[in-house]
Image (cartoon, rainbow, N blue to C red):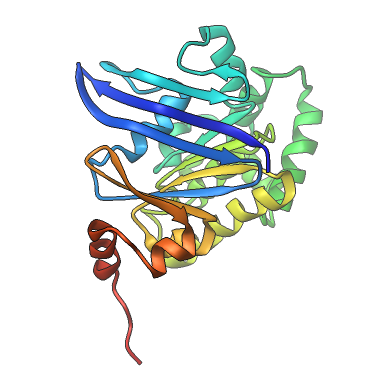
Length: 259
């Protein structure tokens, strides 16, 4: 498989203090890589660094993040604006907070699409409905007419996934996409993410605390601790036969039901 996103010896610092060190990741076309580890290990910073949204005081201080032949850490703001959303998209932990409460979902998604391509409202409606149906939404037209506050938290999160896929990006960065959801809605979000890969060939970099989610979705898994990579490999190998003490500790902490 062809490599599409590569982190090459990346360090990330906040206000001069290094929080992520010597990170190397190779994401291939259609591949899902899960990143697990305790809170504060630097997982979310890796995703935000690729989109240059680390926030005040945050920056990549060493290495490079390559999207094809574009070094995202050095690319111009104009280049990043063209790539973000259209070719690399992100699903946040609480997608509902990204929506304006006093505008309909359809109006906001249409505005997003217009930033990247010339499209009429009629063309948008057709494309948006088709995508929503493909991702398993039964009443796409009603959803587009709705205001965010009329939708449940789980539905807002599912719409966040759909919004990220509007322009069929090649890479989807998913930052704890199911952590605030009940088990039933978690299953729906997982199905939507897997459909995105199946339909569009999307590569996914998935950050989560949920080992079960990684087991269900990921091809490979990376374990992080204190800003460093502890273990990396095929998902089944790492989860079933961990080599490092920290990974074994994580696996032991996963609840198991007894018959």
